[in-house]
Image: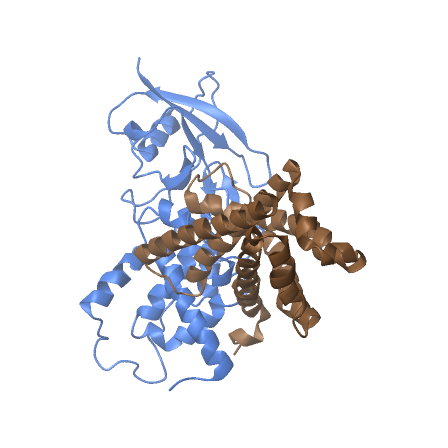
Length: 210
Length: 250
């Protein structure tokens, strides 16, 4: 008899779901919390916030196995999942159907944003020591340009929509919420989380330029 | 003269391209879509005055329990027998379900639903090599009340029609078939094969192909709590995965 663990389909779907929350979603929240400290000024940010992170032992291993690989697996398998759906945007104008589509659109958009975002900060920092030494100044010069500020704002909001809606659907997929009432309550929680994290992210972005 | 206007998407055979035709019938109060289609069939002349082949469609029970007359009416999948013309905007647009192969006009081949029900073992084995039951199986009134909601499914295909994950090019079995697993697993005799059914929906095209768009529950003509079934099955397969990975608890 065939059992679930001999069939990789189910395990891969659940792995994809789990990776979205841990570590990818967890890292996003940590990342926003770190950067929300930009308001304490360049010296504090460069020395205490970034300096502390850069001083971590095994940092490269953590970056690869806790951030990069899970993110790539989540994104790569997510692109495969895209093929299993139809775009029926004009039909069925209900909220969760709209969010179903937004989840897929934001997935692609976030991937493009991350190429730009990670490329211009972490990857560029490998060759350009000045970026690494004064990350605050680097972010300040980037975010002072209105088009890039808007791009970051879009990237932030889409990432949080993807995270919070993912958290909502994950609760159904794993069986945390079953009844309509429980799913509605969890949805309100996810909206509140979205508002909170958006405020934290925006606060961090403004801290670099104000 | 007051009339009822129809626009019907027609297709002569499974391989020919679809086309639209308009019909108009004299107004009469209290028509449903099936009775109106019967009037068109009596005199199949388009609004342009061209005599055409009568429109082909399926219907059977005329009381919304058989699922045969599913079609897309003004953009929403519904039962033609229980959809009252007086409540519809005109012209009334009739289309065949888009997620199943068209046989002719509004007739589609929904046999894939049956294939998928077999795939997930949506039946209860009452015969065995020994007497399976001593007396009738017992179900609490609370459980019976919940199970009854799912037993109303008539495999009409409306939930599949609006599901963005369901289609001829996809393996997803669709909401109704998953809800059938929920129902069969809840039955005392059916629960003997609970693990097999859970394993079936843990494969390709099973539960994890659901995208949680939740359109299904909004169009179900029998108000079946499909998304609750999906959540409950989610919990069941999570526990089944733990049993498969780490061994049983008992």
